[in-house]
Image (cartoon, rainbow, N blue to C red; front, top):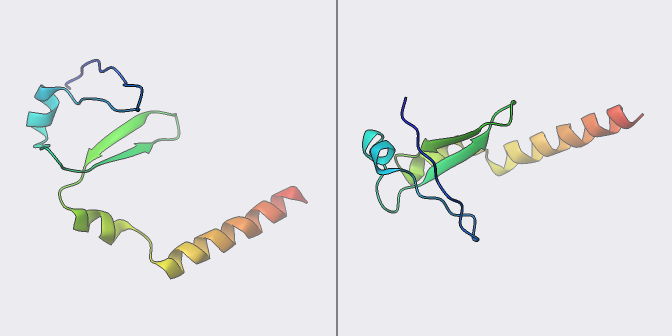
Length: 79
């Protein structure tokens, strides 16, 4: 496992260490997905193509369904 310390700029930017960029073929201009797991760990995942982002994103209809289900669940929990 590779690791390295990075400093966060005042604009929230970081630099991924060169060793890790090379290992994962991360190049200038490439997207990296940033997520947080249940324990609060931050995960960076290289995105190979912008199409990878689009194909994993919910459609408008799916998003509306998720949103409405979430609202219904919130209403049930508030009772």
